[in-house]
Length: 276
Image 1: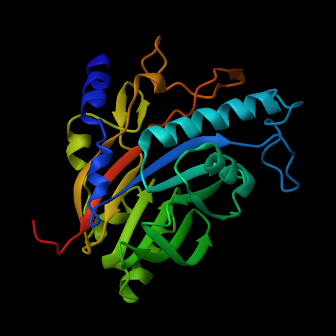
Image 2 (image 1 turned 135 degrees about the horizontal axis):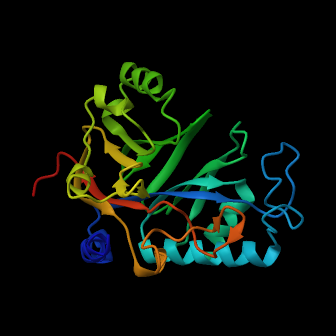
Protein backbone atom coordinates (compact mmCIF):
# COMPACT_ATOMS: atom_id res chain seq x y z
CA UNK A 1 0.00 0.00 0.00
CA UNK A 2 2.97 2.36 0.53
CA UNK A 3 3.73 2.05 -3.20
CA UNK A 4 0.17 3.20 -3.88
CA UNK A 5 0.69 6.26 -1.71
CA UNK A 6 3.98 7.12 -3.37
CA UNK A 7 2.49 6.80 -6.85
CA UNK A 8 -0.48 8.94 -5.88
CA UNK A 9 1.70 11.67 -4.48
CA UNK A 10 3.62 11.77 -7.73
CA UNK A 11 0.63 11.64 -10.07
CA UNK A 12 -1.52 14.15 -8.23
CA UNK A 13 0.75 17.21 -8.38
CA UNK A 14 -1.79 19.69 -9.69
CA UNK A 15 -0.43 22.55 -11.76
CA UNK A 16 -2.80 25.44 -11.23
CA UNK A 17 -1.24 27.16 -14.24
CA UNK A 18 -3.34 24.87 -16.44
CA UNK A 19 -6.40 26.84 -15.38
CA UNK A 20 -4.94 30.05 -16.78
CA UNK A 21 -6.04 28.84 -20.20
CA UNK A 22 -9.60 30.10 -20.47
CA UNK A 23 -10.88 26.99 -22.24
CA UNK A 24 -9.72 24.62 -19.46
CA UNK A 25 -11.66 23.92 -16.28
CA UNK A 26 -11.25 21.51 -13.37
CA UNK A 27 -13.51 19.86 -10.84
CA UNK A 28 -13.21 17.70 -7.75
CA UNK A 29 -15.54 15.39 -5.87
CA UNK A 30 -15.13 14.56 -2.21
CA UNK A 31 -17.25 12.50 0.15
CA UNK A 32 -16.58 14.05 3.54
CA UNK A 33 -18.11 11.09 5.34
CA UNK A 34 -20.12 13.39 7.58
CA UNK A 35 -19.48 16.94 8.77
CA UNK A 36 -22.13 18.03 11.28
CA UNK A 37 -22.54 21.22 13.23
CA UNK A 38 -23.05 20.93 17.00
CA UNK A 39 -26.71 22.00 17.06
CA UNK A 40 -29.27 19.15 17.32
CA UNK A 41 -31.39 19.01 14.19
CA UNK A 42 -35.18 18.96 14.56
CA UNK A 43 -35.19 16.26 11.85
CA UNK A 44 -32.84 13.93 13.74
CA UNK A 45 -29.95 11.94 12.35
CA UNK A 46 -27.23 13.88 14.17
CA UNK A 47 -27.73 12.74 17.77
CA UNK A 48 -24.19 11.40 18.12
CA UNK A 49 -22.69 14.65 16.82
CA UNK A 50 -23.57 16.96 19.70
CA UNK A 51 -21.58 17.93 22.79
CA UNK A 52 -23.61 15.41 24.81
CA UNK A 53 -23.71 12.74 22.10
CA UNK A 54 -21.62 9.59 22.00
CA UNK A 55 -18.90 11.28 19.95
CA UNK A 56 -18.62 14.34 22.23
CA UNK A 57 -18.81 16.59 19.19
CA UNK A 58 -17.88 20.03 20.51
CA UNK A 59 -17.59 23.46 18.93
CA UNK A 60 -13.82 23.22 19.13
CA UNK A 61 -13.76 19.93 17.24
CA UNK A 62 -16.15 21.31 14.65
CA UNK A 63 -13.98 24.40 14.12
CA UNK A 64 -10.83 22.27 13.76
CA UNK A 65 -12.57 20.03 11.23
CA UNK A 66 -13.79 22.96 9.15
CA UNK A 67 -10.26 24.34 9.06
CA UNK A 68 -8.81 20.97 8.02
CA UNK A 69 -11.34 20.56 5.21
CA UNK A 70 -10.79 24.16 4.11
CA UNK A 71 -7.05 23.49 3.95
CA UNK A 72 -7.80 20.55 1.66
CA UNK A 73 -9.95 22.77 -0.57
CA UNK A 74 -7.07 25.22 -0.78
CA UNK A 75 -4.67 22.39 -1.63
CA UNK A 76 -6.96 21.27 -4.45
CA UNK A 77 -7.29 24.88 -5.65
CA UNK A 78 -9.99 24.08 -8.22
CA UNK A 79 -12.92 26.20 -9.45
CA UNK A 80 -15.55 23.47 -8.96
CA UNK A 81 -15.74 21.25 -5.87
CA UNK A 82 -18.67 18.89 -5.39
CA UNK A 83 -19.10 17.72 -1.81
CA UNK A 84 -21.23 15.12 -0.12
CA UNK A 85 -21.59 14.82 3.63
CA UNK A 86 -22.39 18.31 4.91
CA UNK A 87 -25.23 18.51 7.41
CA UNK A 88 -26.72 21.78 6.21
CA UNK A 89 -26.11 25.01 4.33
CA UNK A 90 -24.43 26.63 7.33
CA UNK A 91 -21.73 23.93 7.30
CA UNK A 92 -21.18 24.39 3.56
CA UNK A 93 -20.92 28.16 4.02
CA UNK A 94 -18.41 27.69 6.85
CA UNK A 95 -16.22 25.59 4.55
CA UNK A 96 -16.36 28.23 1.83
CA UNK A 97 -15.68 31.05 4.29
CA UNK A 98 -12.58 29.36 5.73
CA UNK A 99 -11.20 28.55 2.29
CA UNK A 100 -9.19 30.98 0.19
CA UNK A 101 -10.95 29.86 -2.97
CA UNK A 102 -13.55 32.66 -3.17
CA UNK A 103 -16.34 30.09 -3.49
CA UNK A 104 -20.06 30.60 -3.79
CA UNK A 105 -22.27 27.74 -2.57
CA UNK A 106 -25.22 25.76 -3.93
CA UNK A 107 -26.95 23.62 -1.29
CA UNK A 108 -30.29 21.88 -0.96
CA UNK A 109 -31.64 19.92 2.01
CA UNK A 110 -32.13 16.22 1.30
CA UNK A 111 -34.40 13.69 2.96
CA UNK A 112 -31.68 11.29 4.13
CA UNK A 113 -32.08 9.81 7.57
CA UNK A 114 -28.52 10.73 8.52
CA UNK A 115 -29.21 14.38 7.63
CA UNK A 116 -26.33 14.64 5.15
CA UNK A 117 -26.55 16.76 2.01
CA UNK A 118 -24.67 17.78 -1.11
CA UNK A 119 -22.98 21.12 -1.63
CA UNK A 120 -21.43 22.55 -4.79
CA UNK A 121 -18.68 25.09 -4.24
CA UNK A 122 -17.97 27.09 -7.37
CA UNK A 123 -16.07 30.14 -8.56
CA UNK A 124 -18.28 32.53 -10.48
CA UNK A 125 -15.54 33.30 -13.01
CA UNK A 126 -16.04 29.77 -14.36
CA UNK A 127 -19.58 28.69 -13.58
CA UNK A 128 -22.94 30.48 -13.53
CA UNK A 129 -25.81 28.40 -12.07
CA UNK A 130 -29.21 28.76 -13.76
CA UNK A 131 -31.36 26.13 -12.01
CA UNK A 132 -31.10 23.70 -9.13
CA UNK A 133 -33.03 20.49 -8.60
CA UNK A 134 -32.73 18.06 -5.71
CA UNK A 135 -34.09 14.54 -5.29
CA UNK A 136 -33.17 11.68 -3.00
CA UNK A 137 -29.52 10.85 -3.59
CA UNK A 138 -28.87 13.47 -6.31
CA UNK A 139 -28.39 17.20 -6.78
CA UNK A 140 -28.60 18.67 -10.29
CA UNK A 141 -27.18 22.14 -10.96
CA UNK A 142 -27.61 23.42 -14.51
CA UNK A 143 -25.85 26.52 -15.77
CA UNK A 144 -23.08 27.93 -17.93
CA UNK A 145 -19.52 26.67 -17.67
CA UNK A 146 -16.87 28.32 -19.82
CA UNK A 147 -19.75 29.94 -21.69
CA UNK A 148 -21.39 26.59 -22.50
CA UNK A 149 -24.32 24.67 -21.12
CA UNK A 150 -23.31 22.36 -18.29
CA UNK A 151 -25.36 19.96 -16.16
CA UNK A 152 -23.54 19.08 -12.95
CA UNK A 153 -25.16 16.04 -11.38
CA UNK A 154 -23.97 15.05 -7.90
CA UNK A 155 -24.85 11.53 -6.80
CA UNK A 156 -24.39 9.44 -3.67
CA UNK A 157 -27.09 6.83 -4.25
CA UNK A 158 -27.34 5.18 -7.66
CA UNK A 159 -30.77 3.62 -7.02
CA UNK A 160 -32.56 6.37 -8.94
CA UNK A 161 -29.67 7.53 -11.12
CA UNK A 162 -30.55 5.48 -14.22
CA UNK A 163 -34.03 6.99 -14.34
CA UNK A 164 -32.49 10.44 -13.96
CA UNK A 165 -30.08 9.81 -16.84
CA UNK A 166 -32.92 8.47 -19.00
CA UNK A 167 -34.82 11.70 -18.43
CA UNK A 168 -31.75 13.80 -19.24
CA UNK A 169 -31.21 11.84 -22.46
CA UNK A 170 -34.78 12.59 -23.54
CA UNK A 171 -34.27 16.28 -22.71
CA UNK A 172 -31.05 16.47 -24.72
CA UNK A 173 -29.02 17.24 -21.61
CA UNK A 174 -26.85 14.12 -21.50
CA UNK A 175 -24.17 15.59 -23.78
CA UNK A 176 -23.52 18.47 -21.37
CA UNK A 177 -23.45 16.23 -18.30
CA UNK A 178 -20.71 16.24 -15.65
CA UNK A 179 -21.61 13.41 -13.26
CA UNK A 180 -19.79 13.30 -9.93
CA UNK A 181 -20.04 10.88 -7.03
CA UNK A 182 -20.94 7.31 -6.16
CA UNK A 183 -22.55 6.37 -9.47
CA UNK A 184 -22.25 2.59 -9.21
CA UNK A 185 -22.91 0.88 -12.54
CA UNK A 186 -25.74 3.20 -13.55
CA UNK A 187 -23.61 5.13 -16.04
CA UNK A 188 -22.50 2.07 -18.01
CA UNK A 189 -25.64 2.03 -20.15
CA UNK A 190 -25.13 5.62 -21.32
CA UNK A 191 -22.56 7.20 -23.66
CA UNK A 192 -20.46 8.75 -20.90
CA UNK A 193 -16.68 9.04 -20.70
CA UNK A 194 -14.91 7.63 -17.63
CA UNK A 195 -11.52 9.37 -17.35
CA UNK A 196 -10.70 7.52 -14.11
CA UNK A 197 -10.52 4.07 -15.66
CA UNK A 198 -6.75 4.36 -16.09
CA UNK A 199 -6.25 5.17 -12.42
CA UNK A 200 -8.56 2.33 -11.40
CA UNK A 201 -6.71 -0.19 -13.57
CA UNK A 202 -3.47 0.97 -11.98
CA UNK A 203 -4.85 -0.04 -8.58
CA UNK A 204 -5.82 3.35 -7.24
CA UNK A 205 -9.13 4.17 -5.61
CA UNK A 206 -11.01 6.46 -3.27
CA UNK A 207 -11.50 4.00 -0.39
CA UNK A 208 -9.42 1.16 1.03
CA UNK A 209 -11.64 -1.80 1.85
CA UNK A 210 -10.95 -5.48 2.45
CA UNK A 211 -7.31 -5.07 1.56
CA UNK A 212 -7.74 -3.31 -1.79
CA UNK A 213 -8.36 0.20 -3.09
CA UNK A 214 -11.82 0.66 -4.59
CA UNK A 215 -12.94 3.42 -6.96
CA UNK A 216 -16.15 4.05 -5.05
CA UNK A 217 -16.58 7.53 -6.54
CA UNK A 218 -16.18 8.69 -10.14
CA UNK A 219 -16.45 11.68 -12.45
CA UNK A 220 -18.14 10.91 -15.79
CA UNK A 221 -18.48 13.25 -18.76
CA UNK A 222 -20.97 13.71 -21.57
CA UNK A 223 -19.95 14.17 -25.20
CA UNK A 224 -19.59 17.96 -24.91
CA UNK A 225 -16.54 17.64 -22.62
CA UNK A 226 -13.06 16.29 -23.24
CA UNK A 227 -11.11 14.93 -20.26
CA UNK A 228 -7.49 16.04 -20.01
CA UNK A 229 -6.25 14.54 -16.75
CA UNK A 230 -7.99 12.76 -13.89
CA UNK A 231 -6.90 10.86 -10.80
CA UNK A 232 -7.37 10.26 -7.13
CA UNK A 233 -6.01 13.15 -5.06
CA UNK A 234 -3.67 12.25 -2.21
CA UNK A 235 -1.32 13.99 0.16
CA UNK A 236 0.71 12.54 3.02
CA UNK A 237 -1.41 14.37 5.60
CA UNK A 238 -4.59 12.63 4.43
CA UNK A 239 -3.30 9.24 5.64
CA UNK A 240 -2.96 7.48 8.97
CA UNK A 241 0.82 6.91 9.31
CA UNK A 242 0.21 3.60 11.11
CA UNK A 243 -2.38 1.93 8.86
CA UNK A 244 -1.60 3.73 5.60
CA UNK A 245 -5.34 4.31 5.08
CA UNK A 246 -7.11 7.68 4.92
CA UNK A 247 -7.29 9.08 8.46
CA UNK A 248 -10.96 9.48 9.47
CA UNK A 249 -12.55 12.01 11.75
CA UNK A 250 -13.73 9.22 14.05
CA UNK A 251 -13.02 5.53 14.31
CA UNK A 252 -16.28 4.36 15.79
CA UNK A 253 -16.63 6.76 18.75
CA UNK A 254 -12.93 7.46 19.08
CA UNK A 255 -11.91 10.90 17.85
CA UNK A 256 -8.98 10.65 15.42
CA UNK A 257 -8.90 14.22 14.15
CA UNK A 258 -8.65 13.34 10.47
CA UNK A 259 -11.04 13.99 7.62
CA UNK A 260 -12.74 11.15 5.77
CA UNK A 261 -12.25 7.48 4.97
CA UNK A 262 -12.55 8.55 1.34
CA UNK A 263 -10.04 10.30 -0.91
CA UNK A 264 -11.04 13.10 -3.30
CA UNK A 265 -11.06 12.88 -7.08
CA UNK A 266 -10.00 15.58 -9.50
CA UNK A 267 -10.46 16.13 -13.23
CA UNK A 268 -9.14 18.67 -15.72
CA UNK A 269 -11.30 19.00 -18.82
CA UNK A 270 -12.32 21.34 -21.64
CA UNK A 271 -15.02 21.65 -24.31
CA UNK A 272 -14.74 18.66 -26.63
CA UNK A 273 -14.65 20.48 -29.97
CA UNK A 274 -11.61 22.65 -29.28
CA UNK A 275 -8.67 22.06 -31.58
CA UNK A 276 -5.28 21.23 -30.06
